[in-house]
Length: 283
Image (cartoon, rainbow, N blue to C red; front, side, top):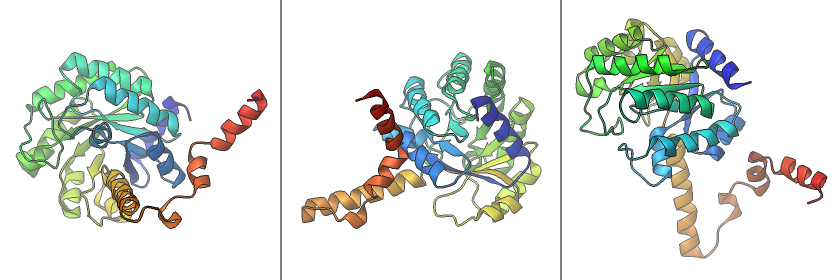
């Protein structure tokens, strides 16, 4: 599918069909692996991308740094990419540019959040929010900036700061400003998911809490349309790398059983196709 077709597909899927599960990726290789595993979408996690670049999720990574990673992710997969855009990286002009950059990178959707600058990970304490009116202006700027059907999702972090009632109220304000889906961060139970989904004017996206055993059918029944797993893949990768690194340090060698086979690794990056092309070119 072309980027436009992926955006149209995602828009339809958010309105109708089973809940869309999107694991969080942080580079081209993790995006390709998610596709091979049979998922239908990927989530380009801003926090995971920041950590891959060596920074915490505290608004320290720039628009251009994230855009470059996003371009690589979108090139690596045929799946629609839902991309984190933090607060838009500045004022309303910055929001406008962010939408253009994310659209040109190939993202199917982005989400903007209602935190102040600098923002911080939604699981951290000390989150501060802009007014609903300021966030609504961000949403309107994003909707106006798009040129090729990018899906605009509005995120609110109000659950942890102002409570559930305020989060629902803010989300519906953002819907009126033009958001096509609403991402309510910090929901703590399937009962909360169901309550929020019932009260929202747009499809609900949920960041599934770490360790929560919410099955897709349960999320579907609760009314969730998009289930994001932002940090699980990166944390799993860190655990695997640490395990092998510690064994290498203590034993002096690595067991093959701890590693993905080389042919599986090579297949993820289409080594056979590139080698065939090299043979055609005689190189």
